[in-house]
Image (cartoon, rainbow, N blue to C red; front, side):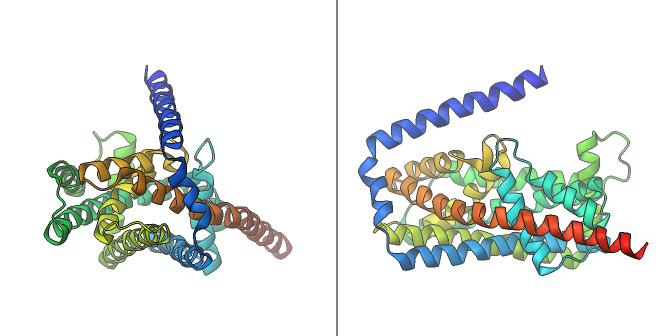
Length: 315
């Protein structure tokens, strides 16, 4: 039953996504054509922000494994960030596995430990995304008069559920009754909260990533000549990033665009324009992810081979 459910849900979402693409492309072809006329320096600015976003996620990886004595070089933490996103865009979405396999082979870092710390860090990320979404809707209302109780409630619920799960798991003294996934999260939370500075670093990194993503959307909006408040992008950035965690479509394809379009409709912002901005944003990020993904798959593979060769020679 569970296997059937896991197959049906992605299929239904895929059908809806294809329908959304066909409908949107047919009715808004002229808006989509504007993408081809954007200025070269807007592409440069968006590319720079994309590289900073990759670096931000890479630094999070660096922070997460340091409590285990694993010290990643700049080449490694940046490369793992790229490879993770690259593999998440492929049909089997193996980004987390790719990172875990590399850490296991190169640094002898147990895959179960990595899953524990990564899963626990997601809870912190959800709390930060929810809080920033709540702050965003309040600021947007004060500055531009745009407000949606549904959006505020959704972000507040995300914070409440994530905090509840975090506090419940953190206070437990035993994991006997936890299912396997909860045990991993439990172990990860214990590790993270025993390193208080790690919590602060993860929070700062998440805030940095949300701001950067909002900035990239705003640059895309300006490049297309749309008059959409910058605070709207600050508000939708958390939900756009949450789309990545759905794992229903590779890299959250179409899901992110649908979320942003929904938020635009709820706030009386032009839906077509907001979706076209997201398409441009997606295009620039994909360009760099696939270009760098191919490069760093080779680079990281060579690091493993070189390390094994050196170990063999020493032996």
